[in-house]
Amino acid sequence: MSKKCEKCKSELFLDKDKAWFCPECEADEFLEDFNPEDESDIQTSEWKVVKPETKPVTIRLNVVDVQIAKKLAKERNMPYQTLLKEIIHKNLA
Ligand SMILES: [Zn+2]
Image (cartoon, rainbow, N blue to C red):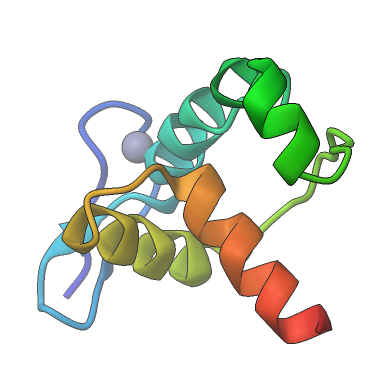
């Protein structure tokens, strides 16, 4: 059984909650939300003292990872970028 995305006509996949998703549209949506230039939340002088310098990077992510990250971020009521920063930071520590 396969389904096609109404927007981009790509093949849809089932996520682990048995919901259909389009990896192409999910990725686009993710990239729209993921704006490495947006550091507005750390522009105040207070944050500059506490937070280390940041550098914008562009990475291509596995669509399933994106799905999971989106879900987790939603559950924790936090932006993806913050969630991903946390995960990367923890794993590099
Ligand atoms: Zn699509």
